[in-house]
Length: 173
Picture 1 (cartoon, helix red, strand yellow):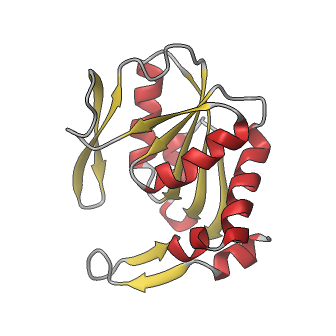
Picture 2 (cartoon, rainbow, N blue to C red; picture 1 turned 45 degrees about the horizontal axis):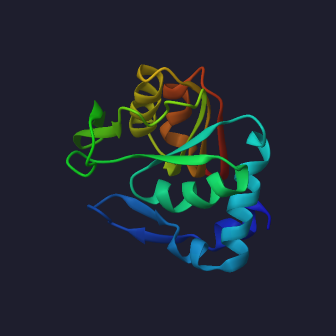
């Protein structure tokens, strides 16, 4: 499927989660068998043989990250909101457009992995992905790239992640 065909499966929801926000909903895209297969295959292509682990960011990054890790033949680590992981964690607090948030990851998430691919459904301002990059690097891993289903170019999140390579399937200007 082309990026335009994928984009047609994304549902726009105005004023969610608050007035003035246009939410890009990927649930119709991932519920479409061809759409989900295209996401996984196209996101995997640039990283085949180049990563040892996928790091999925809560929560839609898990949905995309699990089949992507399978396609790449690597494992899946997860970055979650505080209090959701049962083992020893490392934390990273970051700023959002509307406040702050924290991500946690297990201390041993990358014990046997050097190159990590960070995955999420959406790149907006880059704060969440930047926090995930920091966590991976603090745990001794090299971030081989960040991959997103959707990128909101007008928010310039990619600039916040430089020099990390970013890949996105669907872009909105």
